[in-house]
Image (cartoon, rainbow, N blue to C red; front, side):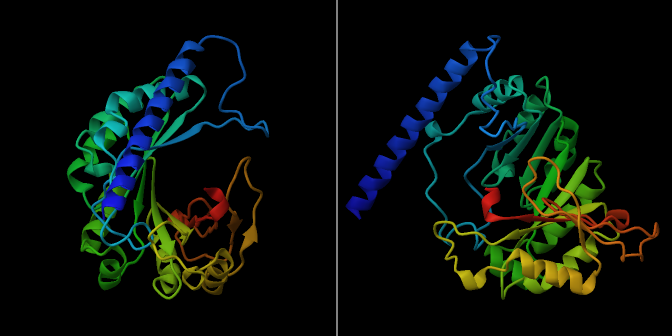
Amino acid sequence: QQQQQQEQEQLQRSNVMDFAAVLRKLDALEATQGHPQRSPLTDTFGRRHTYLRISVAERCNLRCKYCMPEEGVEVSPKGALLSTDEIVRLARLFAAEGVTKIRLTGGEPLVRSDIVELVERLASIPGINTVAMTTNGIALRPRLQALRLAGLTHLNISLDTLQEDRFLEITRRAGSRKVRENLELALAAGFQSVKLNCVVMNGLNHTEIPDFVEMTRSSPLDVRFIEYMPFDGNKWSENKLYPYKRMIEDIRAKFPGLEKLPEEQNETSKVCHSMQLNSSPNGRSVFHIFLSASLSSLSLSFALFLFLSF
């Protein structure tokens, strides 16, 4: 036990040291502003990156099986985490280098008490035209309108099952009905897009794939199907993996006629469509197996994160 405590203290000191190094690099980057140079956001393949993801919280109010162990995880000391001012400073530097979209993730971003203020400050940065958030939706209702008015443009809500008992099994917490209700409120709130993230696990929720697809028929909703990926403590095994090909087979069985579409530059997902979903009012159906899925107004798209996407 003493050895574990010493290892934990050493890890925390290391995190603080790493954080200090990041701040020094930020200082150096600020010093180069205005000087001609190759953008640090252009990779060796010549691709210029314009999308920044920022984890704004380590804590979470759920204990999803695929994300963390049941007892939770040891969080970093407060001094090793970015403050609101530091997040905004970081975002300004990236915006100056061409970033136009910021996504806030966690942990669970809504456990952060100043999340509305943070969104507002990020949305006001010149050059930033998209501020998105990924949330489990549990604590969304009280802040939903405030977030939209503050400048949140895109919202992703995590929901892995439509069954209450299975939700409790996956997340180790109650709240299925609350997430579903908050999802409906989000769809009516006026965001540019609302997406639903679904981690698919073999033998647990894989049979619900068609049910999630049907949700998009009557709602302006994108559904993102995500492969179950290995993380420390989530007891990943290959037999729990429900791979992309099997997802496609399940979708094609109920929604036939899938065809692959050309992929956009830097795309990390598969894009397909089907013209055989003709039951919507406008008689048009499109599948996108893409980083998101949408059957809204008979526009059906699907998103799939692969291991290499991370």
